[in-house]
Image (cartoon, rainbow over all chains, first blue to last red; front, top):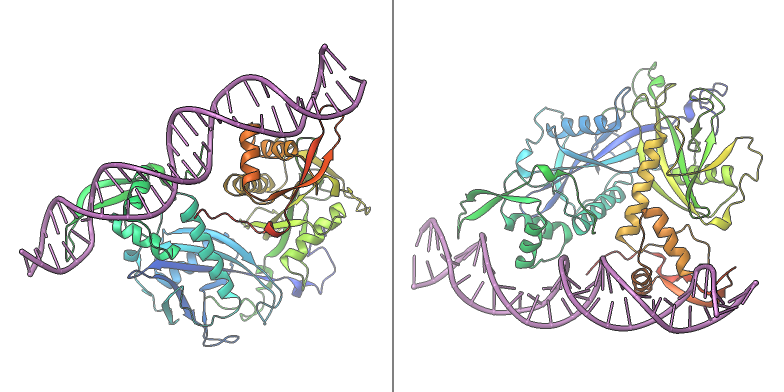
Length: 231
Length: 231
DNA sequence: ACAAAAGTGTTGAGAGTACACCCATGC
DNA sequence: GCATGGGTGTACTCTCAACACTTTTGT
């Protein structure tokens, strides 16, 4: 183990990298998987779109920093978040060495109050599949988040935190299809997700503009934890 | 996005956290999954065992830092490494704020030269299942690595980088059993791993001290990449 | 010949996949 | 009564799990 950075003679403090937290905020809006981006007001990459984030403050855990950034951009708290990965290549920020810990947050459609505080930062939702050119290595970070999300849906029956409290089976199937980029068979999808036991009927139905009303489901509270194992 | 940490008036530099890289070095030794630990020479936690690691140097990527620490402890280069997760709770290091990016490295038994340089640091291999009390939050970090490794073996046919170049089917099965902590059926294991196509026969056999000689296998070069998808 | 580890097949259960029609509602 | 989306069953394939004996070698 190398020595402590402060135990060396002074003049080395400039070597300390900065630590930031970036948060990929994902939501389903009108059958699209959207990510919230902010337009940069300062150099470098001034005017370009970037993942919201900021520097870590003293006595704040990484999760707290991510939650704070999320609240600043969306006004939303109590949201599902997960640490993704840390990016720290030298040169990823031209100003100085910045190590960024990437988180991603999944929010249901109905939780978005969209810029309640006047942060004055310009924000916008983009489809993750049609992004503009992004600042820093942010495209790579979003690619990473998407791979992670797809893996979760394919290999387990985790709760998909992008849905509102009550939803129809068609809505959850559509969410899977949008994220995976593939059509799924209705009968097989329903049988599988109901057999997995993560859902329960609410007894209520959703009145649609057209067609037969659909049963509303919710995730069972008890099985919030994942159960991925096969045996 | 909060402002740049250096753009504020001075007096704030002490706020910058330090960034370290810890590397969990795993190896199979005599049917045990072992992790390499170092005995701390300085406070805090002086005399306790810890995961090898060190502070990130300027112009060094996170991967390079992890590889450097690995080489310092084992003399080994060109090893399979993967980023695990970043730990940064305030108070995890009593001296100051330290954000640590955890990596794990898997090395085959025969790659270990064990302390070729005289680092003077006392190192020792421990079974991951019988660890002493560790410094910092290092127990948590190792738990994390173990969960990650088990998930990989259970949900995919990735190359297990803990094995030497050539190995018998009994050896690879034993490796799976040690890591998963479960007995596996010999016939089912062999059928499954051969059907997955990640292995190929070498044509050579391993002469054993007792019993019938066993066919030696190797991982196929072309399929180093994972193929987890089902459809 | 015996001890030790390698090697090998079959059967039953459950999961995944492909596929097409009837049902309830609003207008 | 018709347009719209909700809801349902069956047959085939493939994967997984359980289970015991024969083969090859060294001594």
